[in-house]
Image (cartoon, rainbow, N blue to C red; front, top):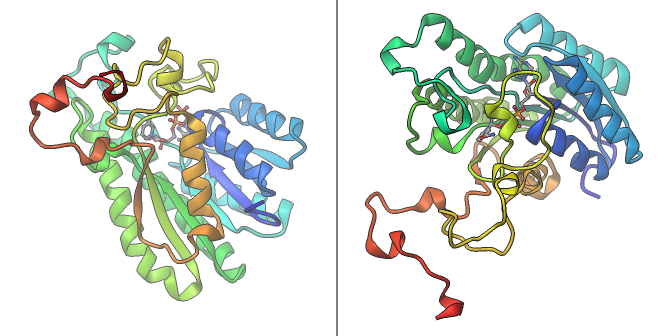
Length: 290
Ligand SMILES: NC(=O)c1ccc[n+]([C@@H]2O[C@H](COP(=O)([O-])OP(=O)(O)OC[C@H]3O[C@@H](n4cnc5c(N)ncnc54)[C@H](O)[C@@H]3O)[C@@H](O)[C@H]2O)c1
């Protein structure tokens, strides 16, 4: 067990990666503060953790509000006595960022509003900064710990229609690098994971939707790695658990000497793709069947 005696606060833990990781971190011995803007989702995660014999509390907080995430950290320390791991995981996609095949509306970049920008910035970057700021005194009092952030492959490479989102996630990477220098003397490590595949379809669904609990690839029918664009060909689809395990690595002492890193999680080589498509990239077949 990798997190015995640890206390972890995870934002956006009512769904997707945060929910899956709450379960994984708990099975590794951690007590979990499940923070989400949606109280029912937070309660649902706590129930799942308790069902597997773990300890967790649900806290309703909007990470874009400094006082709310501050109160969430205070409640965590009051309940569990300390804080070891603060994971700023909550994130939202910008309007126009949901593909039309998934029911999204097309919005041109120039038509996005100040409200659109403030919404995505408030959660994805300001929310990460507020979570880190709120956690630092508790982590210093603890004699060290871990700040983790969920960035995105979109912070490292180009995606259509989510320039606002990409900008906020690139900001997260910058914060992680800078803060790792400032907090190193206190024994506080600061890292991010940048998920690509194996992530939550809830992310593209309206707020309050039932939590799916599986990845895009798992829900999209029978798995054929040679149909998938992921360069690495495995006989099962990537999952939330694959991403949660990368978070576990970064939250645990297995990464004790890693700080200031942005780690592409579950990208299967996607982030290493060539800038230009070549014949062999477009027409891949299973070499085992040749
Ligand atoms: N799913 C993807 O395609 C994908 C890909 C790469 C990175 N990410 C990132 O992964 C992280 C986790 O997202 P997910 O995929 O699990 O999505 P998800 O939608 O399943 O879960 C996110 C949770 O965050 C909560 N939340 C939203 N706004 C909040 C706020 N202001 N305060 C507190 N909680 C809030 C939601 O209620 C939800 O329960 C996000 O930072 C996201 O940007 C997602």
